[in-house]
Image (cartoon, rainbow, N blue to C red; front, side, top):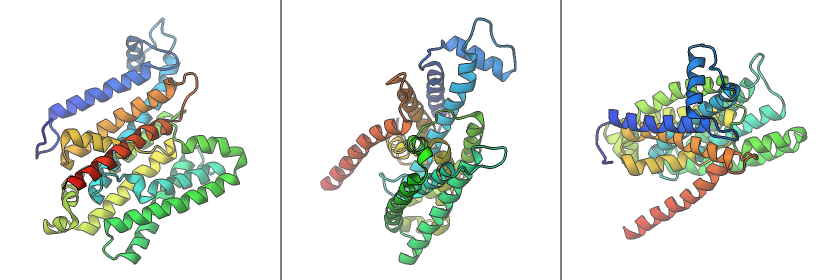
Length: 347
């Protein structure tokens, strides 16, 4: 696929959309109990139009109550994390960057762990306490990181933000370990959650993810031109009239909000924002008007396949999805790092 200066084309939307639908159908049908595609389609169609369930199909409860909400949450989480990763790589001009580079993922994880450990909930919405705490800690982490970066470097340079984000992540990790120590009866739940899992997610979780992606993801997509300027360099962005500090702050806030919600629902799922945009960039090129939409679809497909592997590789034992993404991501990280170093040596 050649690189074009214009945005995402209609046939590309069709291609990526078809791949996503195929992955969705595969993940709903496959599992410990395999369900024919025809039966799955009939159950979903009748459920949408509130028709009686087809006779002779006994798996409607598995499809509608277990697999479909989980698959929707997986797809939305993958799309969200991948979009954030693509945005951060352009913003920070670093192919090894993703949302977790800022330390925001660590902050969101700490907020969710605190909510789980101390049973923080909101009346009528059992999962809302975890979501609220993760978002609150994610945004608080962003403010702390930006304040420290501002004190050290008034221009809020990329290198300063990354360095402080790494140090902050290490600090938050130690606090998280301390909280887990005092939550002995919740240790197993917290440890499994920190490895990343979307098991037991609901349609309410999917709705929260969808609303978050629609609101903050749209803002990220609308800044594709500015991200193109950032990818060349901050001086270039200034020269073409981009308000560097305002755009950087807006992108960081959007990424923090999206990551906070994803972490609160699915736990810590690493490397999605690193691996997927890098693979997509090989197909679409660096233009963010094409890279960002493609990353949305590719992130959904990548995490859907990772979740399917987590459910089926060691059946009936289910692996945390974060284990699968970390394994693939670690290999990809080494490859990307080696390729970038090799390119610099040649230059």
